[in-house]
Image (cartoon, rainbow, N blue to C red):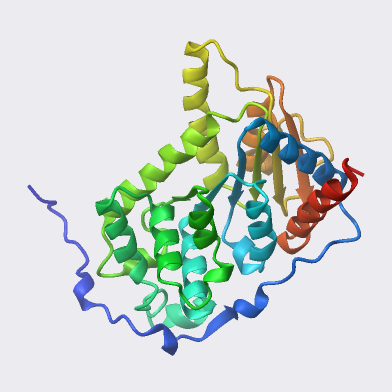
Length: 326
């Protein structure tokens, strides 16, 4: 039985080579790592928490939005991964696209205003390879992130060295991709397989949930993801707490960090009132209040990723050199 409604025929689309696209960013945006002089005190606490979590075998989870990659923060994060201070990375579909395009093409990001006018937005041949990579990964039992990381690493793409996915694959760190169907440009393409991407992304969600089983004493960080990060974290945390209760354990003593541009009050240990627009900023009520209410700690730092991620990296460097947070 099939739908009684008409479906869009993707075979009618013209998908052009990515070399025809005027990309707005290239690998030159990737900076550092360079230490910062000023470091927000919250990063000192988080750096200490990361070191303790590593020593105790607790998870160190990084959740990011795509603007982290567009801000050129890859080298800072790769160093943290290499030092074992990140044990899982959770991203949205746009992160996978930017990472893959930079690794393959050395450029990423198109002018939406330009290409939506003629209906070419998102329809670039090489970017659509991601659909085939993920579908092949599913046939081999892989999740979205592992399939992409394996492809970039094993094919030694021109800029593999700045790919978070390739580095995660090489280090054995799960990079999980959490997709909303219709959100990403590769969903426009004729070779998009919704069933394969759905299966791959759900595999990644279960990998992410498995990582949170070791959250007691751990750290969860969110840079710039207002919806994906708090939502997958909330559901996965409920799952692992459900099992922990059955086993007579608790998952309550851990640290959360949120870095974003919202102008939140200095103290974020209580929710905003429902009459405030800030109440609907999920990272605040979910990550900074509700899920740490039974014994955890939470920190919020307002700033651009190009400032906050280098500060975190600097705090880690100082802690390593001094033996204690400054």
